[in-house]
Image (tube, rainbow, N blue to C red; front, top):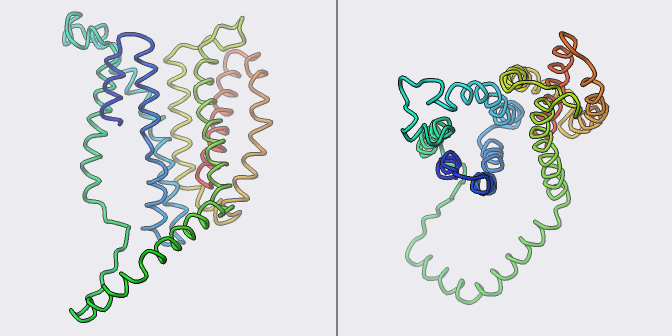
Length: 284
């Protein structure tokens, strides 16, 4: 999905094509769930906190590298006219180059996953021919009733597992909140002052996001495992969720600042909010 639709996003010729490709990219890009399940299976219990931290720190790395990569490679015909002409493919599609680089990285990672150890254990039992004949007759007699019963039990136990369902609900709701915050934050910072924004440039926003991403990465790799060990994942998620409320309420007052005080408060608020968010996402 990343390789195909991210490349198509760079080739968008109108607004609705860009929206459609981004929608399909997000809808078909379910990597976090399988990655967390894989980590929980291959890591021992005492190492699961650091394993989950590594998974969610990838978002921090993306926030650190992404703005710099996008700013460096976007609109190459304007920035590097001696390499890319206006009539070239990258001149007609100014945002294709960063999308293409990301797609190539995703393709390489996809190939590398074939060498990951399989976490699904399949136990094979060697039987003699007589045992196989006996088991075949036994299976023919009871397979229909047993398979139906096991399927019903499996479905019932899955959908009535309230801890699992509640964790999925919390994760989905907070993921929606976090994505909405991430999108609105960038729009808020570049909006003019008369609309309540900060009138930042895209370069200024990239600097804030890069600093935030670096702080998140440090927290996830070196601090979160101790937080998980001290409080436990559920209590950590609860505390971070409560602390997020007054922090979000402070953003309108940050817009009233200017100069160095605005820079310091905005970076601090962005770092703290992102740390609270990744702590909740990792804990759930």
